[in-house]
Image (cartoon, rainbow over all chains, first blue to last red; front, side, top):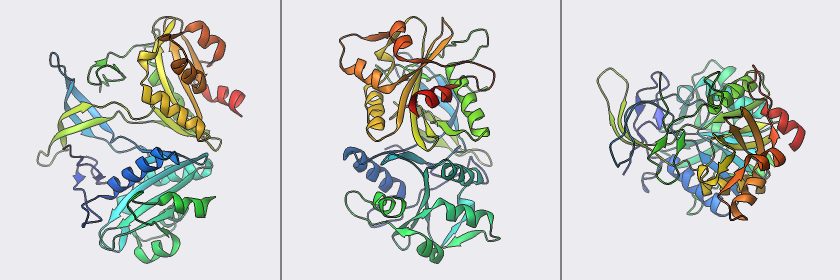
Length: 192
Length: 192
């Protein structure tokens, strides 16, 4: 199987991808997989059209072997310009980033400043912007409005947000079989 | 400079990228570059938040040389799941594909069936969906609503749409210095 080792690119060096983590160890699923499966479910049931953007890669060298596929032989991970997910739900533009935490803190180092600014822009233009945060050791997943993240990022001396704050200001996402993460239910309740 | 050889992936084999074409030979700019510069302009002027999605790449092998960037040493182009561009404008979800034609026909072979279906879904969910088509030999660029493309794709025996039809059903996009392609003006006029 294909491995995507740059899921959690370190913001200090864009070329040093971190290893993927599993927030639901009993199922061996990553947050990204759960969101992808949920998006597939929503798409199939014609509820929403939301996709993960491809991993940005800077292609340097491509070989064209005869009679076979063009093969990229030198490429590097690039810093994403925006967030990982966007799409449309109930006529509204939806935009979000998804992050896993392995303890009771979400460090701001886990999100790029330009991603925070992007989320701010989406709100200003009338879209729905949020962050999905999975606390892997608790097996809890929260949806938190981007305005809270932006505010905490810019108007605080701290370098992280705590689990307690996210629990207070955010909304827990119900986990199930299909969809695995019913995050549209949270949007229905708090954005419409 | 980095080369992106898969801009026009052949729909028959996703792994045989076609060479990029230039629709404005006097400037040496591709349609994609012009749209990117226009999107940068719109972003900078806080008019819209519209991005091109990264080229989808299937990563097979990554080297981690000591003290340097993770290097992708084997990867392949993948078929895009959706269209190339999406974002938000005046509170509305925007989604489009951009294509160059070197003669007076737009062949349906230039667009994937699942991209047509994606555009249909966007309309059904209340978004604005269209295709930008550049006739390179004429140096003319048109915005055509996705509904026309979907209709022609599904309810016609032909394998292409002609320049005359696009001229009649679409809207010419003004070219300039900044933005290079004023496609939001067309949206203002025909979608709001």
